[in-house]
Image (cartoon, rainbow, N blue to C red):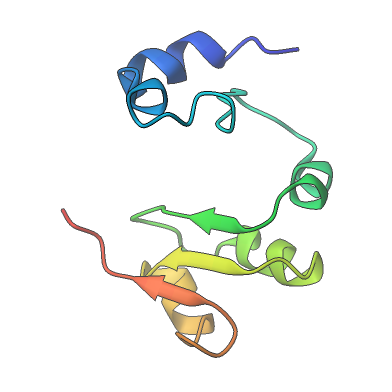
Length: 92
């Protein structure tokens, strides 16, 4: 079920279309099947600015997916940039 597509797509403001990525970007809304999503993904991007632990990090590693994570409180304690993932500082 794709209940959440419209709110996410509205907030993105058509950036996927403007960048020519509309056929490659999905706004699926809230999902409970994280393992299935990671199995279908090439990479895992975890942009949360605040995340106390971040089970997404562990799930990405378990699925053997490359991880790109914001250097938030939780992920920065576990992700070593260039070793077991890539980390970045938030722009805000």
